[in-house]
Length: 139
Length: 492
Image (tube, rainbow over all chains, first blue to last red; front, side):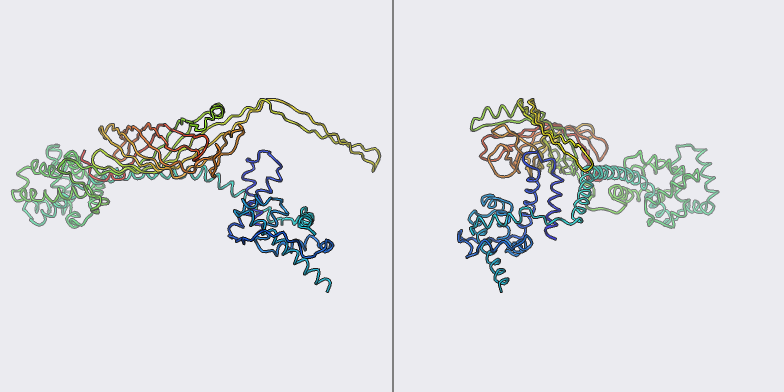
């Protein structure tokens, strides 16, 4: 329901401000940015806390690329959905939407390092979950 | 697997993922869009119209109400005096009145007698007839002073139509209206009364009740709905002369002309000249409402809310605008049943020309003016005032575009920054000076014209900006001034 509400609000903003679109860049990108901003405002209302940790470039713990191949879209969506809010937000913005850490820092009013650390944690969390799934399948 | 590969894997899986939105979401968006349009339309037109109509109706109602009260305040003067007269007369029971009471038993006969008296004696004896008429009103004697003055007056008005004798009373009323005070009127009554119709004792009584009658007259004149109002009672003249006690509501609108000035600490002369060339047509308007309270006889303190808007046009001419048009032609050739060939041709052509781009900017300000006025002239005919005071900006908001340093249009924003498009959300304090002319419409209302000048101390651009932009406004306020304390006694 939350996603539907965000979508609704975002499209109403698009309708209201359609005159402000000056054909500078793609229309899809403009709409996408409005949707993302609307979603971010929802998130800001929740006043999420981002843990301040040092960036950690530790790679996934021994997962082979073949471990991911059996995952389909629904399973990946479910895994991302189960991420803690802060991790999920940064992971979505960086990996799916393609925003840089600097842009995410501005959007979420956090430090670059926070964004990086949240991304690292999110990756580690996801990889651990995939590992658990793999083990359960093997059993 | 590296982080990069992991990210690419997830993005590859979800990049084209389409979870789809339920149909009801689109329906809700469509309905919401319709509601928003209705709301916007209502707010912008019907709502404002309703507010204006309501205000005008209220003013008309209050003005009409005051006229009615003024008329009804005059009428009870006679009835109060009459009641007093009747009560006193009843108590004394003089022979003359006893005779009149006897005539009251037969109203028809009394009416006939009065008419005959009027025909014989003419208008010189109207007040004498009034005394007779008072005594021939049994209802007035029964009700005594408990009858409300207005009702009593109305009662007489109805009776006026029914009998000529009541018309005599009406004549008396008219003569009363001409007199300035009830005391004077009652003296006239005594003076005009023939000695042979009123005895000496009665004459003495008439003289005695004139004082309370005059008191009642003064009380009924300065009351609302015949209920004494201490708070809005007559203001007493001071030793130094009449005391003014007015509270005004002023509503006004003004066409404005705005002057813009630039100051450039960083000597961006080329930029400023470009700005001056591209922006023009600075007009605007303002409207507001304020409360004004007198301080002493000639000073008035005013405070209210003012809304002002500056309109500006930005025109950008690009002489080497290039436009590329792509034309895609798809032809379908059916060579045989089931054998269809699609031929797709794509052509580009480029045009070079001059492009005009016009943006209409709107700069809006909501202010709190606090003005001290010095008034002179005759308020009954034409009054003048000199006004000055600070104007405190509550909020400012803008819509439009300005040129940046590359001469490209950028949206005006109130966000923090030092670009030419970063403007203040509050421009602080300004100074307001004006000269006003007031023309009286009636006891409550005046119209006024007030040419004014407003200077803002702060520029609209934010601190640290490489160019400072300031607006100074001049205009002509036209409005209505409504006196909320017009029920009070006036001494001039």
